[in-house]
Image (cartoon, rainbow, N blue to C red; front, side):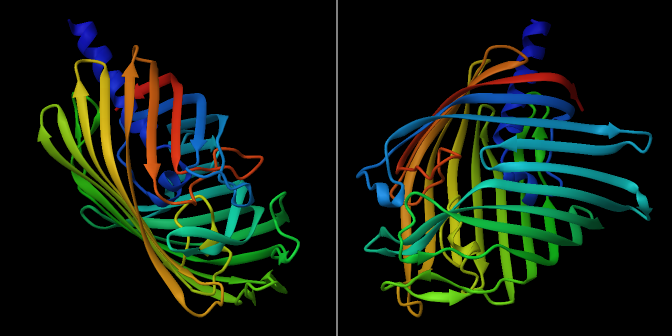
Amino acid sequence: MNQLSLRTAVAAALLRLAAAQSMPDLTDLRNAPRPYSSVFQIEAGAIGSQARQTVPSIGADDDVSWDAKVYFLDESVGSRRGALEAYAGRDGIFASYTDGKLVGDDTVTRLEFRARPWMFYRDGFYRDGDFVANGLYEGRDYEGYIGFGREAQPGLYVELGPYYRSLDFDRSDVTPPTFTVPDGYSAYGGRLYLEQSTVQLDRRRGVPRDGFVLTAIGEREWNDSQGVFGATGGGFSTELPSAVWRVRGRLEWYIPASDSATWEIFGYGGWQDEKDRVQNFEGQRPLGNIWGDGQLRLRLHLGQSITLTPFGQLQFSRVLEEDGTSSTKDFFFGGGVETYVHLGSAVSLHGWYSFLDNDSRPSIRIDEDVHGEHMFYLGMVLRFGSQRR
């Protein structure tokens, strides 16, 4: 019985760690609650998309592709006992080192490297809820960041630092001849984080049970972009302004319903300069200069080894129309289900299905932009060298 309880607790703790592995989770959250102080985790599987109507010119298609991601965490690196965190997946590559002794006075120094080698941009607008493309193209960006943070008051963490980013862009197979892609450019700026956390972990299962994490991020960026880009045959062309601003935020809120059920409210959104035309059309999130993505989830623990989480989803996009002056405001609805089946303390099966009535969803491939309103995934999670807190 003791061995079964231990195995259940360790396996269930994998849920939170696996679910929190994406580039936005790692780059936006500053001090997310973790059940482990060290772990090496690999997840691999198959991901697919199905479009209600296949439209190759905008990437909407039926396809299945491989998916994989790797995560590493060690909170006792070197004699200074700094924390090293690394991630690689379809959505990017991330590495971070934090040190609480370099500056002193309770100040945390954070060094980060971020890379997104497989970016897709969908320059366009919505007409009656359907995405209409001015031009689709590919790109990549690389960023270095150094931040200095400390707890301003109990539960409130503040961090500020500069960053430098390099961006390049290429035409793809679906880029129309009348569309000019942006020239590559460099950008630099400053970033401010404010994060309030009251999350409490379920010690028995190792997952969040109560409380919230609310993060607000502000950026001011300058760049050396030159030249006009955009559609010349009807769509508007423009230059990127030399300075832009961005604000984004995210919320994770956990509300216990019973011993085996927890409500989860996840929200993510942003407000950006209308002229920030490159960032406004990143294809891995809702399009537009004002956007939001929210989920209402119910996490159910079924027995000792199965977790089932049905959810509903709501998205919002405010996108400039083809003329570049007026804008459309569109809401999109959907839902799905996610599940984990824990086969032991180091092995789990992970699967999910989701539907969203939005033509523009994250690509399931890294070599071409392929997406659909229906998305599904099935994979296996392996964990090595973990150490519980």
